[in-house]
Length: 89
Image 1 (cartoon, rainbow, N blue to C red):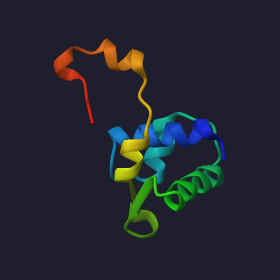
Image 2: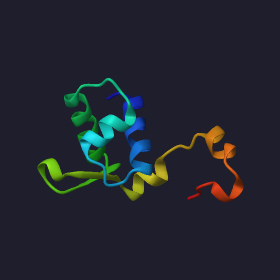
Image 3: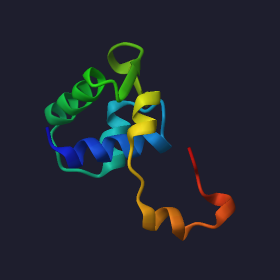
Image 4: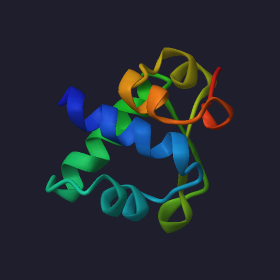
C-alpha cells in the first residue's frame, strides 16, 4: 500500500471527520483511481486507523483514537501557527 496515500487520507480525515469516499477523493487531490482509494480505506479500516459508519453511499469515515495517537505531525506547520491556535494531543 502506498504510504503517502494513506498519510494523505489520514490527514484529511483528521480535519474532516465523517467524510464520504467522494469527499476524501476530492480532498486529497490525488490522481488515484477509485479502486485504489477503496483499497487504501479498507486497509486503514483493517489496521484500525479508520472507522466507518453507515452503509453503501451513506458510509462515512473518521479516524480512530489509535490513528490520532499514532499520526505524525508536520513540525513546520505546527510552529507556523500562533501558540493559541496550535492543536496538541
